[in-house]
Every structure is written in C-alpha cells, then in structure tokens.
Length: 130
Length: 131
Image 1 (cartoon, chains in turn red, purple):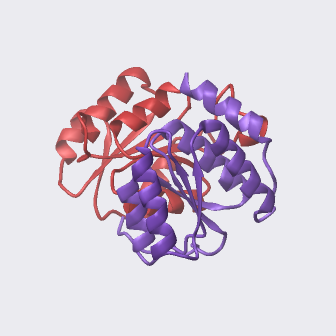
Image 2 (image 1 turned 90 degrees about the vertical axis):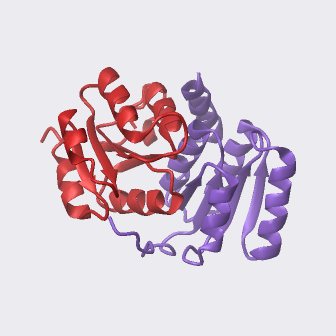
C-alpha cells in the first residue's frame, strides 16, 4: 500500500483497488479475483468504511463501488465524494440496475451486473502509468 | 461479475477475520495475506456466519475481534462456531494489541512464505491509520 506509515514490506508496486460492496460473498469473490490479476485490493462493506480507508491516507488507483448499500450514502454519492477529494482516482460504479447514464454524466464508468471481469480488469489497468 | 465459488479456497489456509473496525481488519488482512494465508474479511457477525454456512469456503481459523462487538454477541458467536464448525479454530481478541499478536503468532505457524514484519510494527501501523 502506498502509505507513509506502512512497514516497508507491505508496500506494493501493484495498482491499489478499493472494492466497496455490502454483500460479503460478492465482495470476497471480486476481491479475490482481482488479487489473482495482481492488484492489491482493500475491501469496504459500505460507504463509511470506504471513506475511512481513504481518509487513512491509503492511496487507491481505482475504486469499484456498488450502488445500493446500507447506510446514509449510496455508491454514486460515495463516488462523487471520492471524486471531489481525489480527482485522480478512477471510479467504477457497478449495479444490477442500469444507471449508466447517471454515472456517465458524472464522468465515471458503469458496469452492469453481471459484468465481464476481464473488461473490468482491462479498464482498471488503464490506471497504470506504463 | 457472476458470483462463483473461489477456486483457490484451499490453495492456502483460509482465515476469516471478523472485525467491525475497517482499519484494523484491513491491516490484519494485508499482513496475513503477506504471510501466505487467504483471508475473508467480515465487518459484522451475520456476514461471518454467512460465509461459514455457505459450505463453499473451507475456513480454518476465525479471528473474532470483540472490542466493538458486544461481548455477549462475540461469545455467543464463538460458541456457535465451535458447535457448528468444530474443525474451525476460533481466536478471540479483545484489544488491537491482542489482534496484532494473534496475527503474528498465526504467521509464525502458517504457510511460511515469510513474516512481513513483527507485530509491534503491525500494531503501530494500525494505530497510525486509525488517527
């Protein structure tokens, strides 16, 4: 993780991705798959957890967030808040409901569930400077 | 993405970390993965039960952080795990210090990929992130 305080051995050169999803099984499977692709992945179960991780100075190259989540903030509101503070972070919104227009209007990328993982991975890889 | 069972569930010993504190949970999960374990992260007891009951995940160890859970809930949960899943080892940690020490001890006995750092460094990292 790109964190100043982190012990040296925890630092990774891989792209850092935050997965925000309230369904633990979907979150675990997606995070595991992304790790298999070489990404460093953190997990949040709702918007509040995601913001806590981001405010803890963990640098994320990309955030994948579900739309419908418990709590005061849904995934689109979370995405907007992240975008406001971290415009360099690539935001990917996923949902079983088609909110493509709403998401694109905000300059973010939408993937409708069930989505093709390889397409998602290719999109995240575009974050890489190389 | 279409949910499907994780194919590598037994490629490495599997630890379920139940901790309502996302910072501590994330740091411990990163640490254990660097040790060579696979880790499931649960933020709440119902989520942990769901993964244990799913039948798809051969969970070896549950680390249950009790500082945020009501202690009655934590002990009820640990009793349930021991009764319903007697092959699963349950470890209870009431403080962040204890959680970090448990993770370090598990790392010592684990897949022996490498121990990324000592538990005081892990604890220090968690405390810095939580500020």
